Length: 310
Image (cartoon, rainbow, N blue to C red; front, side, top):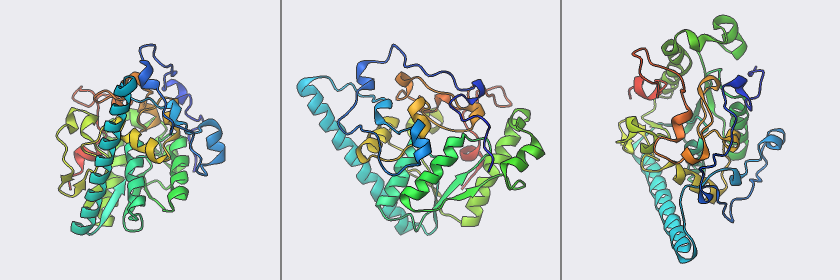
């Protein structure tokens, strides 16, 4: 499959040069004894540029010093253990009360938590893993998907625009700037319809996804159980996700290492300063940048969770 000609260390100018802000406090860049580069048989070529080194990822808590630091880290360990236990309990309950679970992943940090939990619970052979290729993704996203499949031993079901079997065919038919012509139609063709098709074909009654309350005000009241949607990370924070990833040395998207807090399409994803990653709504603050809805409001959703009803 063709990918964009430029590997998105540059993103044709869309990705701002990443400089650690001087305002970042020392604790936000602190490393832990467990924060060592991952060694798990990741793609050798990709790892040359992106070693997946947790020391490049910020931490959000000001632990303090001395006894304060020790006690605060114990509190954090207890919190993440409670969240892990709750997530595992929710996944097990889902298998009891639902019959056809499906997990959609965009390969971002929270999704990596869920994938790792599904693997630990030995559920990957009972849960369909679905990935939407919009044909406008970072090349690294597609490479990372292959890494995860090899690491966990599963095969994702990849969906894309219904009338184009390849990226080349899509570009020839609609052009590489299709998203600029009508963003709503682009979202429908490249994101909403493919996922609707995936849900319909799976006949799922449990759409597992990684939405969380701290993503922003649209999701501030999100529950775990939401009809046919299951949101196992609803009460987690972005920092909690990274605490889990560090603790279990989970593979994460290579572009997190260079400043992308969340990943979407190349044309509408920006890097986010490290000191903003763990603020409310900070993770997604680099998504849909500069895009407007037809009513003139700032775009914050692609339609997958606003247009698809389950």
